[in-house]
Amino acid sequence: MFIVSEDKRMKAQALKKNGKKEFVVLPWEDYIRIQELVEDYEDLRELRKAKEESKGQRPVPFEKAIKSLKLKK
Image 1 (cartoon, one colour):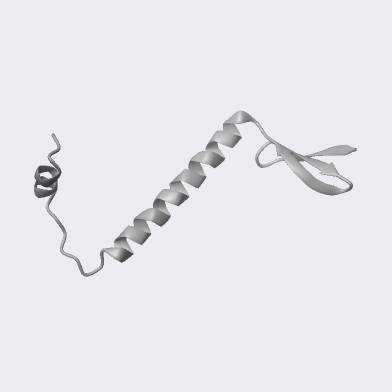
Image 2 (image 1 turned 30 degrees about the vertical axis):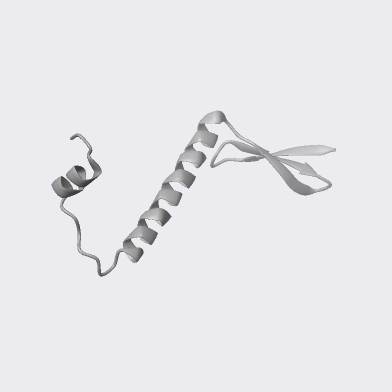
């Protein structure tokens, strides 16, 4: 048997099974916001990793990088 409880901060509802929280139901907007936050966090981790890996390397000017990659501005 499932019991529903609410989380006031996110408008989420926790479904309990045998007294333990088992699932969460939340509005689509809250889900999208959580997904965006997770993506932002993953991007931040990748940026920090790239910065750490590039320590001690000389930066490449933007114009030179564009030319070497044969990209258009």
